Length: 293
Length: 307
Image (tube, rainbow over all chains, first blue to last red; front, top):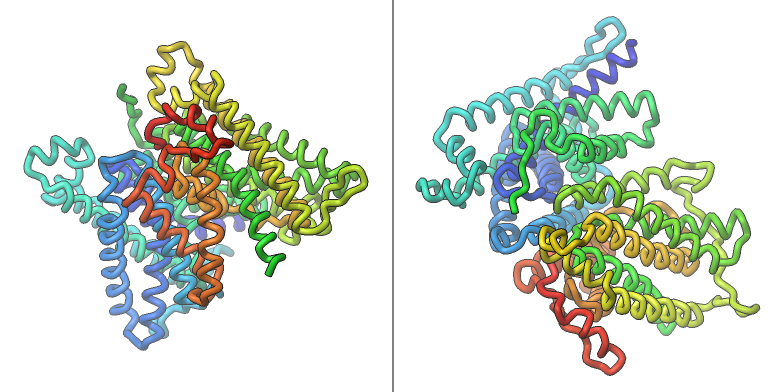
């Protein structure tokens, strides 16, 4: 039982990060109906940028915000160069360029920072402490991760529901031509979506890098797909669903790794994904989408 | 240096088979499936295990490997074919990773990350294809067989039904095609050729390990098919030739620092640039007009826009 609770705690920690990354997938899919394969790489770039800045003696908080901003810009740039020219041209085109961008960034990072894992420790001033709760150990960083993710998710939810830009985002997700007829600048909305998604991914990457105390250029790929699975699990295009899905995937992975075999940990998200696509493609909170002729 | 060129030629030959099989799915049937690395791995591992553990000849290994790959192609087709474009893509990527996790963790059979070394080279009537040059003859033989087989498939009723499904599923259904069966058949045939390539690869390198058969492998094959031109068999020959030799040329003029990373960056740039500037690929839907290739034109004359 204690082991189960421990895995649950670890799962919730990782799951809240998956949820942050899943939001980027789900927002982009909600509007453009394509899987942004490069999203996991933005998560990796965020972590590496922050690490590099800290190495250059930039104060941690500043480094954190600078790398968030850079990733936001990176996301917007990628959309402009690789996705926008193909937006209405072909359906699979953007998917192929997304795969291209993904391996490009992965290997660029490997060329710049090397293939060896890099340690990424918490800043010195962080009060790291483990709390023992009847055998289950929770540390202060896990609590911080959970708080940051929940704050960001509430913030995003309020942004999408209450602001003018959020309304424009929902309208664009509903129907692009009609939204543009209503005077919404669809290009700006899509750029904003990419910026927000990438910023959240960067936060996720930095937190995960410090949580595992390790960075490597491949770190984005598998969590990226796990986060995508989370987005599908919650119902793709559904922001609250992505949050729920992220938590569930994190918990399932950790419990699966603890009870079945750690070697198959990475495969668990995929197995969930395949089962999900077979039996409930619309996810937990999603709506069934009718295919039009 | 001669040995090095023979090695490249062997690798190009194996990738031509893989690219043709990718093209059959993505270019001719319009299914965006990326499971090829898994079929390739299944072919390689099956052939390796059968020859090592049962002592069967390599030919039987390659045959069983490709049949096994085809079997998995069919099994994967049943659940995943209901999925639309990008869901199909991600489910097949998932399949590749699951298969790789199995190769990695099924220690008692696959020896996990250590791989299976000392695979035999094929023999024919006492003659062993031992050197790279001799093996090249074998690879070229298989490439030609694949080309002829695929040309015949594409010119047949089956091939036309692939293209019909690609161009408009609903219209194809209205014409009385069983769309599910057509797609399943396309995936099975494609997996079969991947299995052949896997067997050839395993007995060429004489070693298999799980790291070869990851998602990147599928992406590389996709890259070759896109570059060559979706919906062109000649393109599937051109694509691997260009994408394998070009990085090697760059390596020899000394541009690259860490070569394998550089090569992958290069693949990424090619993929993006091709889709943005020339989505039809080098050959588009054209075929070579050499006498030998003449009949291909008929196959792809009506093949349309690829993706």
